[in-house]
Length: 205
Image (cartoon, rainbow, N blue to C red; front, side, top):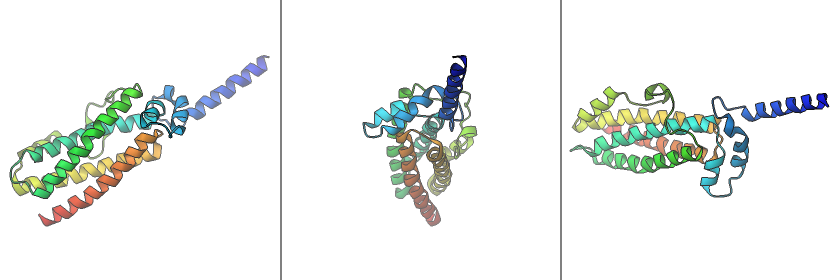
């Protein structure tokens, strides 16, 4: 009897270890139901968002919310300026319209996962997210006018988008939640196209 109990405990430990594989941080409580949530992709998106996720999903979502928020802030700066190139105004409007609802969507996922909406111990966004502008960068953009503002916005937003694409690729590689992976794929598609558009615009200024 003792022997059987020892074997069962060892087997259980092995299952738990395997279930936790691929999750580098602190979402052990979600690793078991995550498999079921990831497989049940047929129902409403909120179902899979609420059930299956791992630490990569949490990190991606917690990181992308302030990343998107900064892109919206930069876009608002341009939309508040006079004499901005109409193509850049259109681009800023498009970025704001796309990323605002995605922020709300990601906040909803984190609440459904019972995860905090902000990363603990990551007060300085630049340390954990690629492509984030510093306070000085944002001040420079806010102060710039005319063609200088156009060039600065495009240069900064290209770097910002490249960071988001890098984060989204990491999510596709490591994430488990099907909705979060789909969002990462959508971010890559949209922002790579916008990077090309911004590079082309920058070349004309």
